[in-house]
Image (tube, rainbow over all chains, first blue to last red; front, side):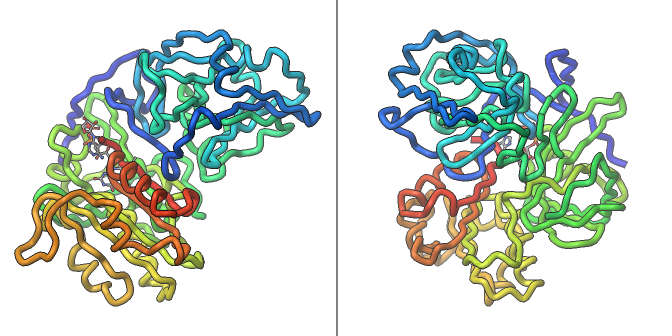
Length: 193
Length: 241
Ligand SMILES: Cc1cc2nc3c(=O)[nH]c(=O)nc-3n(C[C@H](O)[C@H](O)[C@H](O)COP(=O)(O)OP(=O)(O)OC[C@H]3O[C@@H](n4cnc5c(N)ncnc54)[C@H](O)[C@@H]3O)c2cc1C
């Protein structure tokens, strides 16, 4: 019988169950990487009253931003610790938004969607990030801007994000329709439905 | 869609044979495996005697019902899991498997569109499942494969693909060494190659691309520049650069 030795003893308390460390930055996408000119970019939040809050690239960059250093965990079992980002907190974007709904659907350029509970993206837990490791976020990794929700599996951090629509129920997004978990907490290994 | 089993299943290695000098086909018998669609993958978990575990994803080369699944693994020189699966695992040994996973990068026999498959290296594995599903359904939807390889020796399943040529044509492309007498020179796939060797946008194909992340990025970008709609392109990125 062959005995698996394993080469990486990663007894790292920062590593959720079933995850291993990577130095590189693997990419999970359903299709081609869309190219998006910031001149045409906008971000919106759409609520149940029909009201839409909008920011173009200039307005978005003018918002207060934060430097964020976080660990990220992909459902395909790699984790990357101490990644650094710059972005705008969802608390800032939601400051003027009134809604009675508890869930959001994030929409991306390219058509991708993912669902999230509103409380998982407020109170300093999520950002719209536009820089990675001090440089502009490249398209392969979601540039010009992506959602960053580091405490959930990384597919929830929608690349090429263009807006959020409030929803009454936690309706599934793209990957969730195709078998990924509705919630996606890496510490509870909520990978698949 | 075949839905995944809830937890980890145990699979025992039932058949194995080399595909190339660095790759091996391994077939597991997995009691209560629910069957899988062509293109889905499985997570493989290995546990060392002291409890340390490693998990990696592998596409399934087989498709349909039954308790046997075939994987095809390429050994990465400094990899943790692939060298063990290619060199060490013996018949009768067990691993844990979770799946089938992924409902997007699949092909089902009831899909009406012509299908173009584009593989880089081990990225051919889910397409082996698709060509098998296409053959066993006696399907008449056009399907063809463009298979990019480093050298002729790196081909997985060459005989099987050659036998299928009447229904699914394979176009071989070599990036560093070509066979003797080959009419083309070695080199990376270019937009021109893709234009010549793949179904054009006018045929409204569904195009699947699978391979390393860099390969998928390059090919998918070239295809959109040739006029393919982004939502008519499905991708699976195996990792690496
Ligand atoms: C959905 C999916 C399906 C896959 N299907 C297959 C399959 O059918 N057959 C197969 O052989 N592999 C497949 N892979 C890749 C596989 O999951 C592993 O990444 C691969 O076997 C390497 O694991 P390892 O433990 O040997 O190497 P690791 O120890 O994880 O990595 C060793 C080094 O290789 C790099 N690396 C990791 N992956 C790749 C890659 N794909 N190409 C080049 N460099 C890489 C790493 O960055 C690292 O530097 C698939 C991946 C995904 C996400």
